[in-house]
Length: 187
Image (cartoon, rainbow, N blue to C red; front, side, top):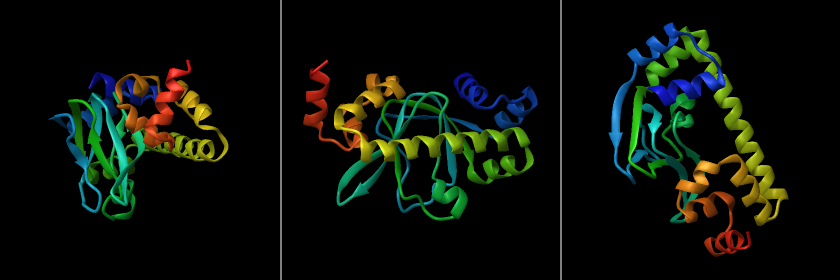
C-alpha cells in the first residue's frame, strides 16, 4: 500500500496504528483496463484505493460520456451518493489502465471515519480538496477560454495529460477533441 499510504500522509499524516487498522480492512484487487469499478444506477458497496493505475469518472448524458474526474496512484474512488445518501451512484468509474487497488467496504469505511479521528480528518481533507477541485473546474468552465482551461489542466494534472486519452481530457474540459488537438498543436 505504499502509494496509498504516501498519498494519505501527504493530505493528512496518520500514525502507524491507523495504517495497520486501514490495512486490516482492505482487500488487494487487480482490474484490467476498461473495467467498470462503479456503475451508475447501481450500488457498489465498496471504495477503492488506487495503488497503481488510473481511473476516470463519468456521467452518461444522452448516450455521451462526460468525464468528471480522474484518479491515479494513491487516490480513492467511490460513489459519494452511495456513501453518504444510500443512493445508487450517478457516475461510472472505469479503469484507464490495468489497476491494482485496495477495496474497502463502504460500511467499514464509514465505521473507520466514525471511530478513528485520523481517518475522519483525512476524509474531511480529501472532501475539501475534491470540493475545491470541482468548484475550480466549474469556475474555469464559466470564465476561461478553451486554451486557458487546457493550460490550467496541464498544470493541475500533468500525469493525466501523459496517460489519459485525449478524448477523455477534452470531455473533462468541455471542448471537442478537434479543439484540444488544435490547442496541443499550437505549443
